[in-house]
Length: 281
Image 1 (cartoon, rainbow, N blue to C red):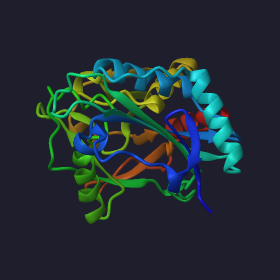
Image 2: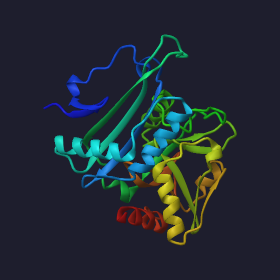
Image 3: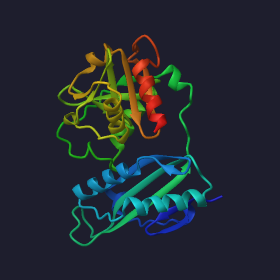
């Protein structure tokens, strides 16, 4: 049975959603995307996701005129049409059709798509055993201007994730060219030292994750000292706890990095507390 999607102002069957072969998202990866979850038909932190794609669209001069309220109504329609409650939502924005050439001098007609699909949740067992990470050999440039945006140009992330998969790990740590930890291929990373939470600074050239933001908020609300810093692999290997975050996995404990065990208990106290608080939201 076809899934229903939103494409450029209307809801259509996914099998009937046609895109031009001249769409710049297809030709150049010239676009942005967001992924989020719904819980009981309610999109979680939708405003934050819309703000991020809107800010990035402004940075790249891609027209984007949808409000959070408009997108909320579209998602509600898609959930009803596809008979979904807990769902995976993806918003994709392309610069769309424009004048030929890398730099489009004419007026572009953007392409905007929203998919709503059944959520393929992470196995519950992973939240008890933790996941393993490796350190990728691919470095993140500290001056790359697209690393802090969620763009359709995702091949580097693909290569890093493939490297992790080939070595039997869930994800891979990315070091930047200054030798500081940035993030993972599809997640932000946090370490816990004693009772303090530390995550790589945005100065390391990382994506400002929505779940990352929520974790920092939860730390403040629950009296947990949290900071954003620049640090290397050795600090992660010596941490009491390590966890990774994104909107689909929420807060996931890490049990091993490059074959070295992390901490003494999975999940340990701070990771468990933050995940419980996150779930209560």
